[in-house]
Amino acid sequence: MSPRLEVAAHVLVSAGQERVWQVAMDWSRQRDWMLGTQVRGGQGVGAEVVARTGVGPVGFEDTMVITQWDPPRSCVVRHTGRVVRGLGLFEVAAVDGATQFSWTERLQLPVPVPRPLLERVLLPVARWGMAASLRRFARLL
Image 1 (tube, rainbow, N blue to C red):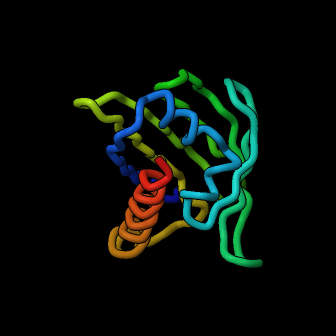
Image 2 (cartoon, rainbow, N blue to C red):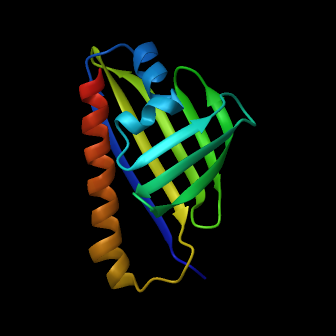
């Protein structure tokens, strides 16, 4: 069985919860903060979302379905593509006069990966990418 990968990151921003939610869930604007990704899709439970992740001609399409939609607090997507399977969670919460935006991915990798490669390469790269994306997100607000 292919290994599971869980990666999470969060950022505190000085914008209100509603504003953070609006920017985070504007799929077409995710390219402004999510590294190497362009997204399109609907909103609400059952809506489809499609992301193209990559650089130039090298990349893949990530199809998703929204399984939970609770504005302005949380959105859960189920990744349904051939490359990416699992859950993505976006959470927005008021914290001490600021707003925390959290992004978690719980993925089933498409191919078996040796644990050392997973722990020493894939996880650190994924964590770096998510953290860099969330820093960009914070700058938008």
